[in-house]
Image 1 (tube, rainbow, N blue to C red):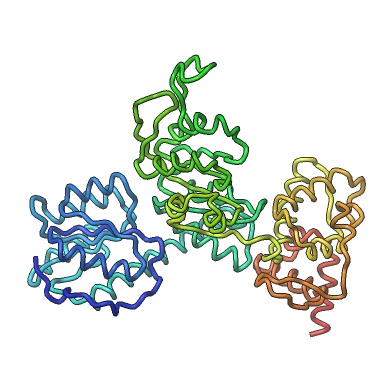
Image 2: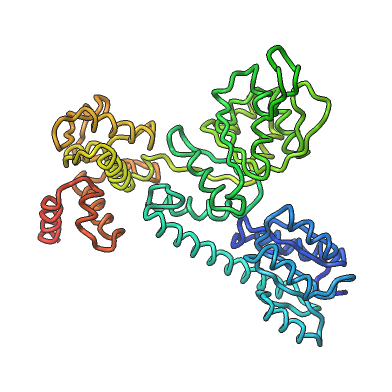
Length: 472
């Protein structure tokens, strides 16, 4: 098929981002058309793959997950409608746009009845294709956000069990939802204690490989001399004590996900072998001359500045680029202080349920915990509450019951570092007011639930609300 309106291309296609992390398969038997469509799609932010036949498209669909397919209905050797049917069987959620010739719109109408999202007739222009792909991206984004909302309603807290309603977390949930449906490696950045493994599990269990293994590997805790055998396995007799062959963690994750936690701690010599395994999709067990093919998705996390590590020669640049296809950053707890009451309520509720003891947090203790910077993030907050819960004999946890570094925190008249990281003076009473009103709003006006999650008595909550109303 020919389409002179699609060529030549200029460099004036604007860069926008409606299709971040979306995968598009372009199926057409003419190379010039495939490359033209690829250029337009990539300018819109799509990751693209191409196929020149229906059979090649089927093979691509077996090994990858695609959000959308641009399908020529006049492929040689295969009926377009039959190809559409097989594609929808393999990837029912994919948005398929069919390409048909002028005068054969009837076949496009039939394709729509068979599940196609839309169609375009050739010859078509760059602007036509661009508008169509933008519409596809918006459609897929809406589907993703609806799924995200359903997941949040199901978990009642965040995404995949992650706690947080702050704007920074809402942005993170959207990226997780997009990354979950991709097959590309994801690099998860965040300080220690922010929940990088929980995010990795959310990506895996929200995606198409949720029924396959999820294998976490703490790269920082593995003994340097045993890392290679732990990751790649070994054959019998490979070293002293290797009395029988053993699969490595990479092989155990076959068909699923391997999570390389603190990947920045991998020794440089092993980084080269990891790069080869990712690129070639095969591993060589220690002591073996035979290479074993693998099919795993790579998720990696670090609290290190890998850009700096690359500059210093402590981390391979090529491995960094290979892992950093998609990246997301988990905000530190001090950057989302409005989530602290939600987290406190979640952990307190769990501890009450486990111990059978009813305990609440005092107003003063809540104020101190809101002002503290939490260098250890969510993990430190959880440990703080568990310790205070265990060592407090009464029903109320006061400031004095908190760990010394928190209980003895100097309390200036007004200070708070907001999520932007810029110092902004906000009186503590105003921060408390915002937290309470935000909690009630998030819970659709349920004041009793808000009081419980905030760790304060319902009488205290009603009194504060009365004061807020009186003071405007």
